[in-house]
Image 1: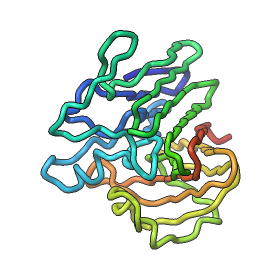
Image 2 (image 1 turned 90 degrees about the horizontal axis):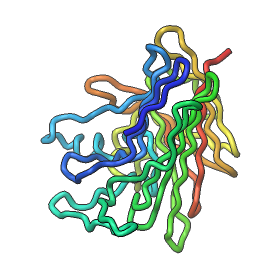
Image 3 (image 1 turned 90 degrees about the vertical axis):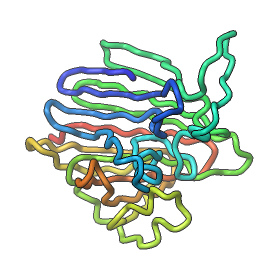
Length: 253
């Protein structure tokens, strides 16, 4: 894990795991606080005997991570030891990830997962400039055909949803299990950029922008938080073999 802090922002980046046991598909997930206000956090999980542990809380779509066809990091079978990778003469677990850059001032951290999935790699850069938190997430697929490349974004406030969002009752169809837990789903199409405000506790309002080149789809819904609470979530999706998603959080003026 890595931590950056500047001004009112404090951001935690979880970029890998040492072992398969108890791991979740949460590599490159981040949590953020603005002062005492919880902007986005890790939900943890429920009892291991619950279907929601296996089908929701441990899966990529429950985290702020890049997604390939709706899935996050591939952890491999629980019962098997994943083949370690030899890099620069040293054996390392493919779950560990790489810390690519770290700076306390200016506050900036970058990490990558070259073995994010069997046919995909991912990286993320988080930086704080003034009062703005910027996240740049990139995912690349080595598949020979275009893939559904996406990003999960979860917020602990109340979203002022843009008027162009329309109800989508078929959202979970043909998507991985975690999307079946979404409720009150609405969707909209954007080109290059989407913007909205989120009302948080302590009278904090964040102006959020999400951008990726070209046309992309965005879905919004209510999802499980740490039980019994709920939270609001976004899923952003484009089609191709490489995608970069840039998200900014800035206090509304």
